[in-house]
Image 1 (cartoon, rainbow, N blue to C red):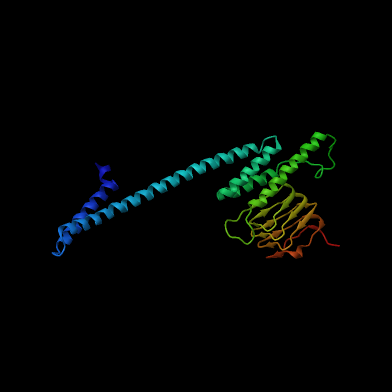
Image 2: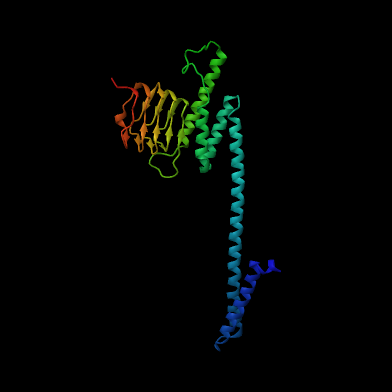
Length: 276
């Protein structure tokens, strides 16, 4: 009984009847209105109440269906994320690259995954990695070992490209994404024209280049105790918070004057090659 009394349908029907009777009775007080016209108008008023209930019911069903679809999408996304993480440990380099592209696709379609995917890609670049270009003093006589190192280098380059692709463009609005590349071995990281929040790459090693041309660094930029063997390009880069380059070693010429700094960068112990 209590459930019946709480039913919206019951109260809608009662409201329709009340409106029907009320409007009809009110119109009948006017002698110029016939009983037929009064009843017809009352029925229309009562029907309007029922129609409003129908609209509310359809909207409720629509929202319920949307919620169900969203739950299903979230479940599929979680499964896709978990499977991609698992495949990152696969021995085949093409499988690892496929897993990275799957994660990047997830980041594009589900914005709430973007920071998590960036964290995963950065973590991959912190994995131990040896290559003749990074470690020329090691024994690389074994051709299979050299080939495996080269394949892994291509996988890591894919991760670096996807990091750039996921980051928003400079000058845009929206969530700020951060990069944690501390202790990573980087090859070709180009963040050209991208917007980055906090950037941490302490103790990292860069082989080919770290290119920040036209980048917007809206958070702290920490590149301490790092080594850049290739280019460090900061042309028109905008550093909006604290910049620490303490003990940074750059083996090729770098010109910091072509960048914009909100405050002078910290260069304690830094060794930067100059042009000319």
